[in-house]
Every structure is written in C-alpha cells, then in structure tokens.
Length: 424
Image 1 (cartoon, rainbow, N blue to C red):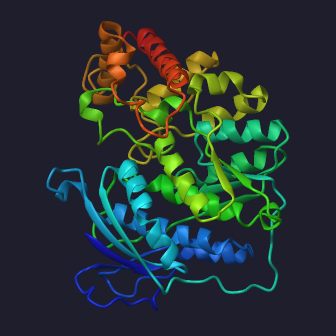
Image 2 (tube, rainbow, N blue to C red):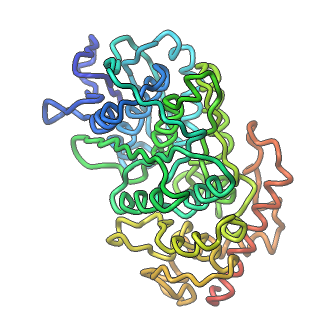
C-alpha cells in the first residue's frame, strides 16, 4: 500500500494510484485521508515553538498512524503482515532519507509490517508567532489515562520533578487525562493532542503504531521547553511496567498478532538513536523497565493519591468495545488485576467479566485467560528460560538477568490471580 503524505500544497508526480493523505489539514475529496489538523491548531493556540526536526518527526508519525488505520490486516496475504510505502513531505528531507533504514527497522519491530520510507521537500512549516510560550517545566511525561502513566506522574512530582504532561486524546480516556493532570502535584501543565486520523473505508483495529505518535508528541513538547532552548537535554518519561514492556509471547500463536511492543527496549532504543542523529536533545526514559505493575503500585511514592485515583485508570485492551468498561479478561486486565492483588488494595474497577475461574468461553475458556494459564503451565513444566526463548535476545537489551527476574515476578503475580479465581 502506497501513501503520499503532506500538506495540501504537496504534490508528487506519478502517484495517481496511491492513497493521498493531507497532513495538518482536512481531506478535500471522498477518497483522500487526513491527519494532524487538530494537533497543529492546538500547538499554535498554545504558542509553542518546537524544533523543526521534531515537527518533521510528527509529520512522519502522522503518516505512519494513517497507514496503520488504512491498511487492513485481513486483506494481506498472511492475514496480518502488511507492506507500506510512504512518501512523506518534511522540512529536511536529506537528513530523514539518511535515517530511513533505521526508521524502517524500528517500525517493522513495532508493527511487524514491512515499511519503505521516502522523504521529500514540501513539508508544512509552522508560521512565526508573535508571542512564543516556552514552558518552564524540567521534563515531559506521557499521561494516557492508564495506571502506569498515573503512577509515573505521581512519582515524578512527589520526588521534586516538574513535568509537562502530554496526552494523546482517546475516546473514553480524555476526561481521565484531564482529571489526573489536574490532581497531581497541585495541577500539571497539560497538553492534549489528537491525531484525528480520517481514512476512507473501514479502520484497522490493531493499531500497533499508536505508540509512535504518542512518543513523537512527547519529543515535540520537550523541544518547546525553556530549558531545551537554553541548550539543556530534556528527559521524556514513558512510564510502562517492564512485563508489558517486554511483553513476552505467552504462547507460540501470540508471537505477532497479540503482542504489542509499545515500550519495548528495542523499539525505544532504536528511536533514541534517531533522536541523537537528529541532534534532538531528548532522552526517552522508562523508569519502570525493571518493575512489574504490582511493584509499581506497591512502591508508588504517594500512596494516598494513588489509592484515590487508581481505580479510575484504564488498562483494558478492549475498553471501547465494551462501552468504556474494562473487560477483566484480556491480558492487560489480568496484569492489572494481579497488580492490585500484589499491592494489597481492593480492586473495585467493576469488570465486565469478573470471575475468571468460570470454565466457559467467556471466562477461563477465553483465549487470553487460557494463554496465561498455558504460559504458567509451560514455565512450571520446562522452566523460565525455555518458555522465554529469544524474547530477551534483542540487541538493545543489555540487562537480561534483571529483566528475566522481573518477568518471573510478573508471572508470579499472574499465577496468584489465577489461583485466587481457580483458573485451571
């Protein structure tokens, strides 16, 4: 699938058969796609001044997530892997074409698709603004509405940091993002951005590329800070528990289709190399890469605030499908429920499927519950190393012994959950 991505003024010869994507504007014809108009308006409204290459990264991320929406996996030859060819208009095409191979590898790891990138002149440049705002915060933190990002923001403020909170607006979580940002540290400076992708036809539901747009929002925000413009490096905190970060495939069938890689060290490491090549002084940090979700909750610096807000967070991978209720049986929900048990606090979330021990297709017989049970059985029978296989063998992973111990702790938390509900 080929997509031509740029502002309305961008034109590319010989692209008649490609999908046209209007970046930072509205589509003009029924067959076109569009993305980024709302984000551009909000950045201008806030009078922010991002670095040009950070803006180029956002253009790429918008093109990628539009492709992720437009390319239906069930129409690919194997029912999953897609081929994308993206032509993207940017401000500095020579630099980005030199980074194309690194970016293609990072995207392939993130989405398990094949990507070919070509960059062109003609990218949208932000207009000069009379009154620039350069926030005085000392770091950036991503707030998704999830439990891990909630813990991360609480810990940062409780230990003296002043984070600029960045969110990707998601239906069902936008109000939670506002609530969390307003409640932490006396109220955080908060920027909500929406990619507002619009594609002709049906949307692909897997959306493995969504983490790229979120991180690129964070990179862009980091380059607007006063400290960045003074020549300092800015930490960008992507807070995710290590078990989900590594997300080892529970069974052989989950190698590609059901294992996301949002905060995997391999993906974040490859993205960091691109930032360094671009001379963007932004350091991507996951302070919980060696911690399970249960450990994050138990060790949170402000237990009172966490107790008041944790149940309001979202973890479910099927949240929108269940009318903005958490299902209780998907892998993220099981990890969440196990974490509450490790924490020792009551989980009053109100899951659609509460009793995991019921042996039918909705509960213990459901694929995700069964997959966790099979993983626990495999580790008990053959040992952790055999079950892990090559999950920790990626080049960007250095602390394999520490991560292996963390994965074991994560499995122990899930085992306690299954024992509590009598899952067999």
